[in-house]
Image (tube, protein in one colour):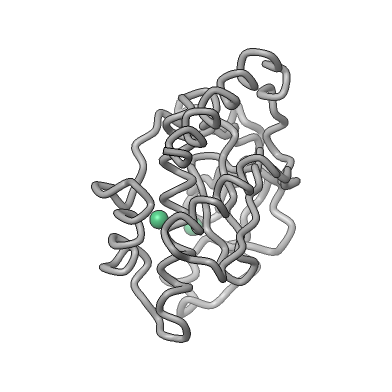
Length: 204
Ligand SMILES: [Zn+2]
Ligand SMILES: [Zn+2]
């Protein structure tokens, strides 16, 4: 009973958070600073206790830098990391993902030194114990893949193959096709990609 109440209270508090501070959700895309969540952490540890696991203490963080990953479990740090975009989906999704990741830690804790499959039998059992018996290994959340603008273009002087890059090419890089064809697959200056203007990439 007490446990159920805890879950309900938790759900409400997340929804409150969503409504009261929408600015928290306008997150910088590239930052990967972890934000500690003592509320969720406390909940996670209570949940572990409620399934009879008293010797595992976990920490819970949000990582605004996550893109399409809903959550992560880091065994070495006994840590769950969640994607703040989950807050935009629903409190239920936060719950589900938290338990999914928690199940990874619980399963690992239970087997001790043995190695286990990430989404194997032990994990399924842990999921069931944590209240998500039909959990699938992958989430299907509507997280959009970030479209990256490729701003830097290069061309092979030999075959005119174009290389589009998000960042500037810092190392010497040559056309692999031509290096294979003419130089046994080894780098040759002759086939080194040369920077070109974007307009040159438009087919004539
Ligand atoms: Zn997983
Ligand atoms: Zn080439």
